[in-house]
Length: 125
Length: 192
Image (cartoon, rainbow over all chains, first blue to last red; front, side, top):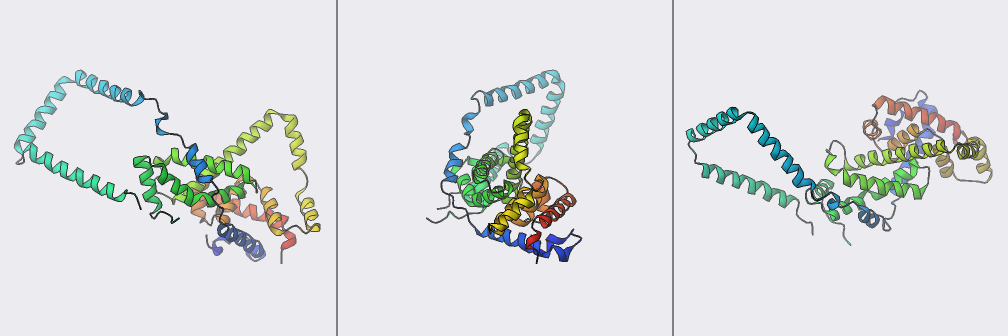
């Protein structure tokens, strides 16, 4: 914040100038006064909770739950899903590209995306 | 040893995507001084408490890194977590005091020493302005102190302070104004 911003709402701007100067100077001194790490970062990193703290069964359980929900949905509306599959098959057979071609294009896009992500996240040495 | 190069955003992405603790450690190293200094101001110079709260702040940041949406600078987001930690600590302390009324009354008697008397005594002993300012800051309400620390000591705009304090910009301005009025009365001896 600039020093001019501080007085925006003060009714006694001139009277407050000394206090503003005092607070600004204290803020500047605080920011210039670097606090040495002295093992602080190491203590924080040691105290970080590990990702493995989550129960091992949680992820497969969630996947199984979603799978069961999907199967239940298909069983509840069989004609809708048969129609949907038929329509999708019709659309795919009409387009000029082969399934293998579409797969290859998707694989290329994915490898480019992940390659770019890996490049941007590479270790800085 | 040279500091690893890279922006905060790169280290955040590495910590998020690969769970890289070294990347997060670099973020801690970069921001520990400002976060600890902010908490020292908020806790009126209690360095041990400030460091405990700073550690809690970074652990919460690690846990909630996925919720950081880059809507503010990473440092501003850390100030927000730090301020919330400090407010939560104060709330907990108040509840503990309420649970033990006898102690609370005793504490209140100690705290009730008039601020101006104490400061006049300090003047007589030649105590520095810095200490007087710290004491006067300690006498402000939580909201006033937090607003002044964000605006003056962390050098945030009123908008950024409003994000940190999770309140409207107008409220921040009001807290700053009220806090300054109290500081003005407490530090009148230093008025030129």
